[in-house]
Image 1 (tube, rainbow, N blue to C red):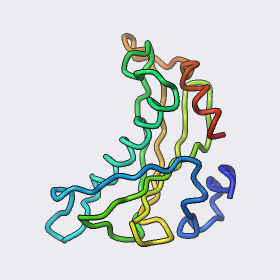
Image 2: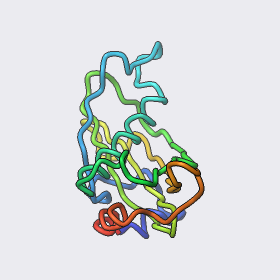
Image 3: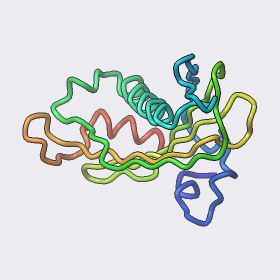
Image 4: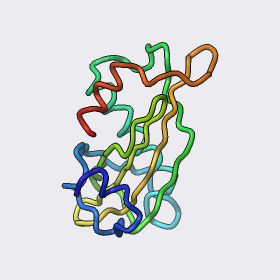
Length: 152
């Protein structure tokens, strides 16, 4: 499935697999990730998504993204939950790019449990790049655009 197919609304998100995401990164759950209900709390899914995106951006661009004159702010997020994750489990995070605009990037994200084929959670992040000082939108920085081109 291509990135354009991943973003289509007629695709059942439960049918997505690891192979549908060009970037896969393992993340270990922690003891403190489980909540009183015995599964990874929903806020941890967002932490995993954020870690996935930013770790990949640093690795793929070869720069410390915190030192760029523009910063990518998350202006929209969503997550659909399909299965529970639990400690101790190694979760595979999947990353794809749906769209790169002038000043924004839309990411499709997934979390796969250690023993499951389908995603436990499917997320979406929208980054808008803004000037570090003025906080006004600016074009996606060139090193980030070059890194993103590897996923489009």
